[in-house]
Length: 163
Image (cartoon, rainbow, N blue to C red; front, side):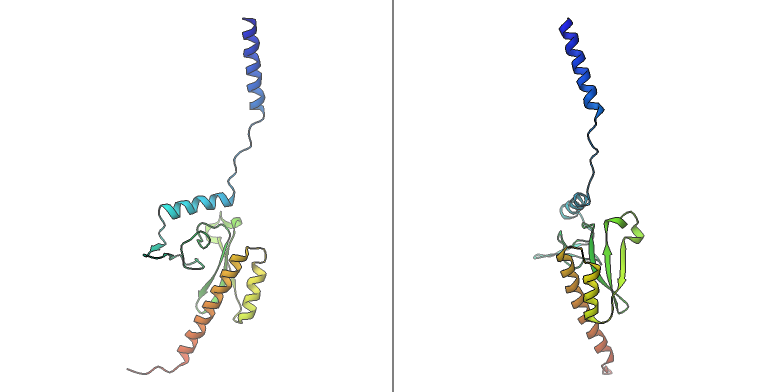
């Protein structure tokens, strides 16, 4: 009986020492939550997803490529940037983790200059510490949208035949 008492007390003291130093709380990093969001979007349901036989497209206005994949999904990336056109002007839209708690201020919009070279330089300066793939995709989208706006202005100036 005496040995049992010692054994029981040693077990209770072992429990008290382990409970005295609790395990650190589990913190979910932005990357982990991005993976969880992408898993749900990819495997279950996304209202922006449009599937064809060959590709899966994304109809989200902030999607930089138009394709539904992990790197170009604005919902599944806590740090994301794209180019947006409003009323003939181009804006660099940036989303960061720091603004995630304010949905109305989630996207920071920076007006890009009309000069193409200056706009490229501004993208480089604004996205200086961002991943190269994000900068490259934004520059590609800037090029495409600049050409689109040039064609739009040219068609507007060209006299239209009357029918």
